[in-house]
Image 1 (cartoon, rainbow, N blue to C red):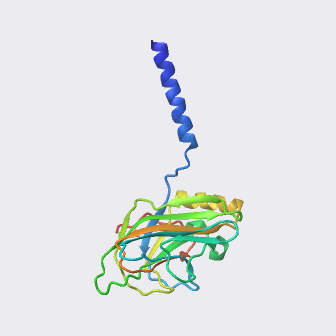
Image 2: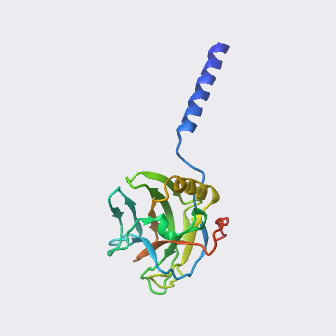
Amino acid sequence: MTKVFSKGLLSLGALLIISFASSTAFADGIVFVEPNHSKLVPPLAALNLQHHGSNTTETGGVRFNGSRDVAFGDISAGPHQHTIPFMDLGTSATSLQILLNINEANGQNRSPLTINSLVLSAYDSAGNTVFSTNLANGPITLDQIRGGQGANADYAFGLDAEAAARLQAALAVNPNLRLGLEASLSNVQGGPERFSFGGSARNEPVPEPATM
């Protein structure tokens, strides 16, 4: 009986090891850095989301399929949905920033907006996803600054050290990767919300997430 029990434990342990080894989940992610009122020149627009009808949520994204960008979900009208070649940013993974401009049409009723999910992906020339990371410690609720639409940004996000290291390793293999975004937001009242890519002022690691 003892031998049978021991063999059972060994089998269970082996299954657990295989399960953990085959998992593609990572403990890193996208972190909130700071309120950011910078004006980007030029603005590298990546994704505009705008809800439809009476919905108070908006979800969508843009990815690369090997020949063109594919936008999906609650995207706004206009040519604002792009994957961005990383080389166009002229920066390292540690200084990459995802910038958000909130532009809700709700007058002076500036109710907070919540980011439920935010996913950054990198695609090779064939459209394969070679890197992906999610919003860490989400959801995140943000006040509406109403700093204006266009080339302005209200908030900045970046990669923590682990995610930046993974992206940098992928870029070392293929520097021609394209970046795409997916996001889901709630408590929206008009929009659009614009996500853009940029770089921090200095080539330095992204700090720990700030206290909201």
